[in-house]
Length: 227
Image (cartoon, rainbow, N blue to C red; front, side):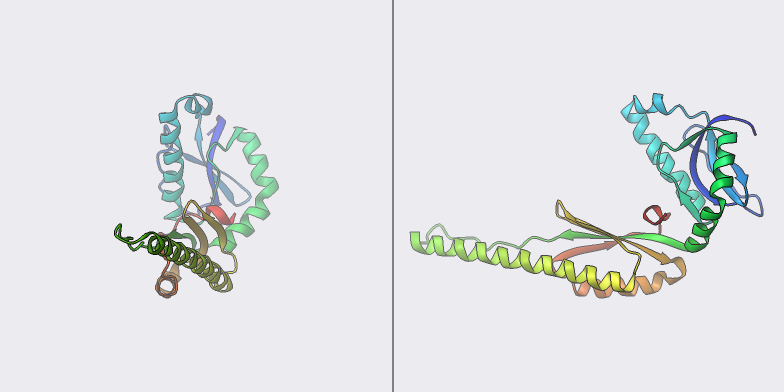
């Protein structure tokens, strides 16, 4: 199928048999393949027009991720950033041919694995109310004690986070750590999907060791942070 302006979602091993391809941003996608690597593409996506309309842009980003996730449910993929496109089928084929070995090796490394997001949300210390009836000195003493309790809590919270990072990266060497910001932190884990039960057990132990944070573990996603 000849076409110009090929919007590209992901790379994957060239399938040995036909696979169901999802609808893209505007129309069904198709595969362009060379040297054992295939690209899932869609023809004639007008990115400039999409970017001029916030609603269209949000919808296109959602569709982009949805397409990649659908393919990921069937096979290993190398997901590409939103907005990736090639000017022509010839330029895409040239790219696949020149990077085939690199992509094939990466696909083999990621085979059967998913990205799991471990999210940390900081808890807050419940403050004891200070009685209005307390005298001036008692009132300021109570405020000082409360302030100190808060400082102790946040110091312990930071130590818990550092301990978690140390524990988790010791087990999951490839983990990608995003430091706390706006009361939230994340650790991206690359795990074999056959080991989800083991990951669930590890998650329970991390929860028990991390009282000052609320932890959540997402489902398997394409390996966005590991390509």
